[in-house]
Length: 532
Ligand code: NAP
Image (cartoon, rainbow, N blue to C red; front, side, top):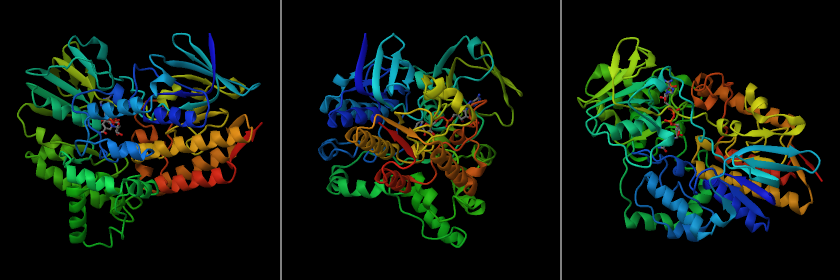
């Protein structure tokens, strides 16, 4: 039987939960549809050992309810996955959100009707919903990249995927283990597995920059201090470049003396989030030479942390500017390479040929292992949306439209797909920011738009193609004038074979993005076509 509602929200992560809550507040009928069995999104799906957030827990949490942020107490500077999942579950209980969700339902198609401006949404099990507005709160890092390594299915040992971790703990004790991938996930997994594995082979193609997390329990005094000014501090951060409100740049890196730079970078390294490096000096994101000063500083840290200097050189990223790949935080990652049981397999030196029945083979050697762990990343931004048949005007499938490169206006809508809002969509800041701050802004803005449309009896909202082209061109321009021009990461879709290259995150920064969105809203949603 078809169920009709005002708003359908896809996803029960942080964005989906807030969207359902907001739609209820507007007095609209709303239904959330979630593939998993419960709320939590990323933190529901990702359960691999060692998983921790790389944004401080007091920041990586909702700011839209003062009582919630005053009541909830985080135990550590950087929370581990179980604590973040408990937080999401607490929010769902506290605001009774589950009653407006259906779980274990994967959306497979959503088709727009040009006649009555509704979307018909169908799930894998055949449930059908009709909604006037759809909010895709599906996350930017939700669709795992498919394994693209020859022979992977021929392996006779145990294979695990970071994005689909088994419910029961995996015992690595005394085993020979290979970890493929050295992004945030691979770094966390390898650090954990190195503790007990007989041998760990870390298969590295592109090294990441990673700095010590300096994780620690949060004292009651610190928590009390944060809570005193929580609301005002969060307001300040909403208007900052990264959503974290980290100290901004004071001058050019090239004008600073080497000694000044060293002290400044050391202070950041010891005390602040690694994201602070982006704003450490005015020119580090635009000038290659200035940018290189950060890489040089961080390289010296790798050389300090890794005893074998030839090995340290292999672990130091040299093929891309700092900031064009996610900087990671770790708890002893480089130090595992000082252990006898840990071996770096440098795939740039000897490319991976294939996975075999007993292990893997590079151009230089064969390795036998008991377990292979894949931490190979995501089809970021577009993968999860392309997994659904999203059929818009003229029967066009979003997947086909985005084949030439994903395009949106303000990350919120793609032209040709009216009434379909995206959260953390392409060309929104999301992954280049504290994503909770960004997704709150996206959901608040979408909620404001829906409220406006309802009040003014509009039944349709669509991104204009001109506005979209301008928005995308402006972001691409920022890609060209910043170090992102030399990016080869998932930020530009480079990690997935055949994916069109386009700068996926908005580069303008969280505060300016918010200001641009607010201006558009205040100008009666300029750049969007509204119709009754
Ligand atoms: P990722 O950064 O994309 O890293 C994937 C790794 O797998 C890369 O080292 C990649 O090498 C390698 N790889 C992929 N295909 C390969 C192949 N065929 N052969 C050999 N190596 C291959 O993915 P991720 O580590 O899952 O992280 C993605 C993002 O998720 C992070 O940047 C972060 O935003 C988020 N995340 C956050 C946390 C946290 O909060 N601490 C934890 C995990 C993830 P190449 O680069 O050479 O392709």
